[in-house]
Length: 292
Image 1 (cartoon, rainbow, N blue to C red):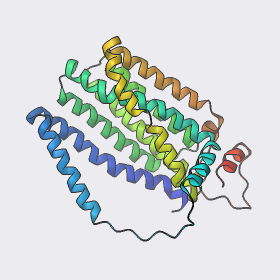
Image 2 (image 1 turned 135 degrees about the vertical axis):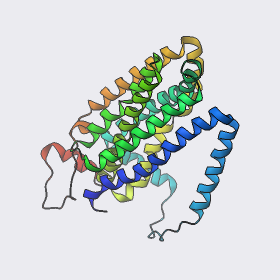
Image 3 (image 1 turned 180 degrees about the horizontal axis):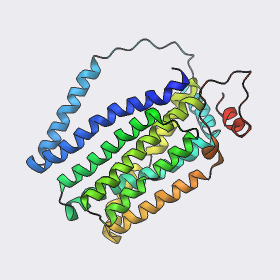
Image 4 (image 1 turned 90 degrees about the horizontal axis):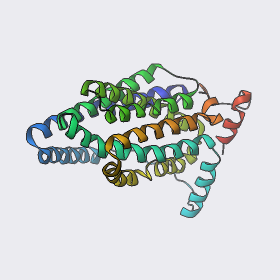
């Protein structure tokens, strides 16, 4: 795919995924409120079975043959290339901690706050639907908006997540929390489109699978820890305190990543670099890192 079309293609893919999420979140909250959580889980299970049936009918062209290498060799090469890109490992490290915070606060404490102080499952469904609407708006916006400093915009957008934690900590009225959730959803998809586009631009094709694996592993490694400790921390210090601290942790992580020079300076390339095209001086290090 031409490099100039990557961002738009990524945004279109995210739009379809997020549009489906809007209906799922709102219908799930309504179903649980009307019929109970058991029926909600049953319908969810049916949707997974339908997705599996549709996936079984998909056919893909055969991939080109590649040289066989040992697993340890591939891991060693992938780890070396991962560490060679400071912009990559710094943002993955950020999301290792950020995902731990958001997993515990949103997945565990969010429903607790909704049940205790916001009216229960219906309100929580509206809040999740607000996130879905924001995500769709973010992906639609990224079809047209192509920032030159992709990583800087992505990092600032990811920091918006703190707004939802602060809104739940107070907590604000449900419509205001829905608005905060919409803002967070918007920022999440601005981050995702710019992040995926950056990886496609800066990482050679033969390394993409390995470095994406390190990205996924690092980003979700501490999520179970966040879920496990959220309840005990809320019992000891109160849900509002945990949410506030979590929000400030996200703000701090965002500021730390923005201080990384490569994150601030990396720019979008409209066309592949040829031997006759020299990168701008401030991009020389990033371009060198992105080559095998």
